[in-house]
Structure formats: C-alpha cells, structure tokens
Image (cartoon, rainbow, N blue to C red):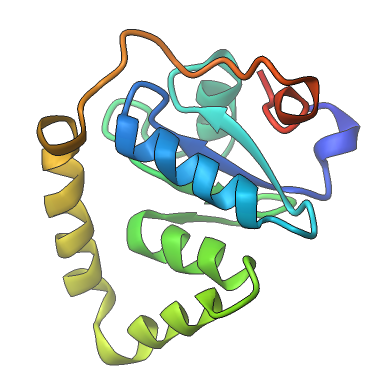
Length: 140
C-alpha cells in the first residue's frame, strides 16, 4: 500500500450503490481531521485489502472499516466506528453498542443492505472523483 495512507483509516464501500456513495460523501464532508481514505469493494485495491485480512471477498458486499495495521470492522460496527471519528454529535451513535446487541444491529444493517439498490438505486460504474483534492482521498 502507498505509505502516505498507512496512518489513515480506510473505508471500503460498494462503489455502485447510490446509498454507499452518498454515505462516502457524507463522511468526506465531516472528516475535518482527514482521518479517512476510501476504496470501492469492486476495485483491485479493495479486493487486495480484503484478501490481506482474510475477509471473504465473495460474501462481503457492504462497508468495511480498516484501521491502520490489520484491525477491521464490518457492517454496523464499521458504521459506528466511522461515526465516532466524525466529531460534532456523531460519536453519540456509539450508544447503540450498549443498547443493541451486535447481532440485532447487524440484522438491521443487513435489511437495509439487502434493499439498498431498490430504495436508492445503483450506478453502472464506481464513482470517479474529478476534483484533485477529493481524488487524493481514494486509493484507486
């Protein structure tokens, strides 16, 4: 991996999902401390990062947060960890760790994930940022 990204948290996302792309834009706008970098799950970089961590590339089709090193989070836990780094009031979402068990949070997450294309639509190809500053946040 490019060493300039070694100390960044990496968000892997479904690059053709409109909801996922909107979520990435949401994070970018609130990432005031420049903590995150992004790659689509469909990209070579995304596939390599999954493989390096032993994450099943065939069954993983939703958000993955990779911390520097080999630690990673999936699904609802990834969303909570990301929100915790956004500042303002977003870290309050961590409360869901204490009031809802992981299995229930992930069932809710999976329900939304199963319906995301139907509810939000799907792109033919992954988002390609045109702005050089924004493009630098993407690993591919």
